[in-house]
Length: 370
Image (cartoon, rainbow, N blue to C red; front, side, top):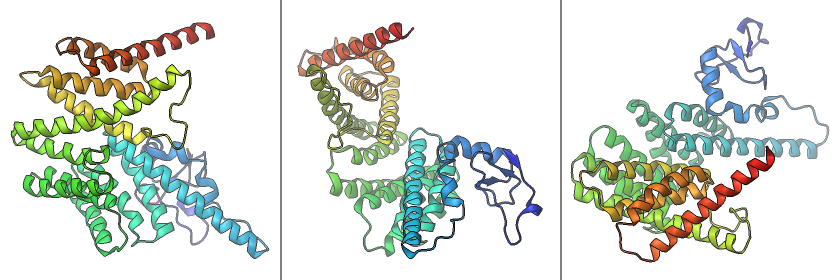
């Protein structure tokens, strides 16, 4: 942190806070190209995204040197554009991850950076801005700032309406956020209408039984749960669990088969299907919520409890958090003992064995290092 005096700015230059646009009195001492109105906003931005992009901002915000040839100038312009696009991708991804983790306050600065660079690169009316509007809207819904959320959703809605090349994936996300907004306002029927559209558009992209569609089902289930329509809610929670369980089972099978061949994959192959960081965060959010609902139910159904526990165990195994995977596996084993033995029981046994093997390997490696 370095203090700055607005009166010392070059003539015609106004330094503004990165987050609120107020006159800046604090400068980041790392990049020296980012300014804030006070230390509080600097810390907020650092926690959210600035730590990850501090040095990346320097070549983007530093005036380019004079170049003699047209080829050099064209190359510099293209390089600057690629850097800005990289920052858009990085900040958008980080904002989405923070949302899945329930860190709504932290998501806003990252998304604000993404919006600023997106406007710079694509223009105010571009469909590329819609995803960022939706992240900002969802973060504000999570914070209870519904008026601000409606403003962002209005921008997103009209951009999609006027666009001729908007994908169904974006339309799905738009309707999901509208569903969340109306749910927060207590307008459940309107919320369900938008979430149904979310499921429809997501299904046209990847099918009704894919993880990209599961979020719509999950939020619909939450509404029925709030309305005490437990049969419908329970059915939808089971559908969501089945979708994630099937997807995670397929990925775990790849890992276990590779370990049997003494091949390390962990999804380094670009052609290999895998869970990215945001999918892991979304899966954890959804599956943990369903587990809590199942756990608090007056009557626990062993088969449903076993499936959600199995899914969470697989999720932590795939994210390589073997300690957590072992913890969930220990909750899973007693539940499976109440069920009839089948192929799933065998796959659970193999999974637990692999988790313990990974833990033992880590322990041996740690002892050798120490």
